Length: 340
Ligand SMILES: [Zn+2]
Ligand SMILES: [Zn+2]
Image (cartoon, rainbow, N blue to C red; front, side, top):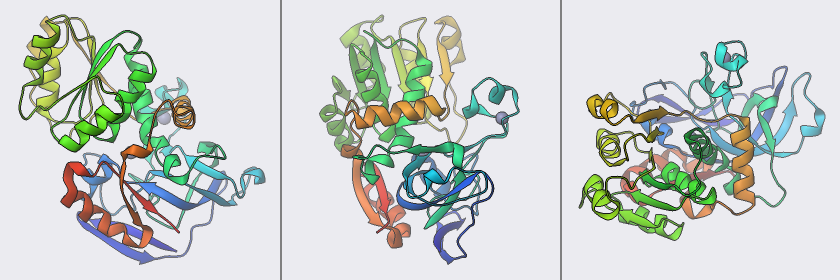
């Protein structure tokens, strides 16, 4: 089979290797569609704190079960599926308490174990999710990033009637924004420097968008809503500016959910976090319930995924995908790699 191996940063090499055989408890997936994630982009540039080369990327994918290993229900054969890509130990404290997303030994397919930039990928059969009949491959590949958003919103607690700020209009920010709207937020403000992403946010239901390159969000938010106006924030970028702005903007006593992946340590004023009794709440990936909820939100149309898909390439063109992302910058929101 063909696969694309990131042998070193910026060097994605096409390789011809024998197709993997599913081991006991595994299913083999013929990949149909795979998305490129912010973390794949960090990894591509050698800037992801927990991904190292060589690695076959690809953790947001959907496909068809073509083989099953020992002990796996043959009913899966031929089914259209997506896969929760976490590999967990099942034994550590968090695994024993149903918090598999923060397993002590967590590995992710496509991040620390070879992934779906390949014709076939073996996965644990207990991580398969059968797709609704009418769901396209493209939408199915968006379940994973939506599950990240669902999890982040779930850990934030009650959303109803809250005024929420989302920092960052990338795929995760746009999905978080839609999930909080679906769950009954009063108003959502999205801060994003790229004008295309801002217009997409408006199209998808943002009540206000702000351009942090022309106005400081903390200043704008305070003038518009006063010092008590912001109930909750989601940092979906992973840079110093956004977390600082969130700390300055939120009402005292509220929560800032940290969803963005920070490639390097940043300076924040912990004195303000203490004095304002703010909660900085980290969030990572998702658990099964979040994945199932993401599938439901997409298939019911309460969250729209396809408007995020700005670019598509064929599997053979996989290395070109990163050139497109580099060239298009913010105008590329979600790029999907499609198999024939
Ligand atoms: Zn992802
Ligand atoms: Zn564990």
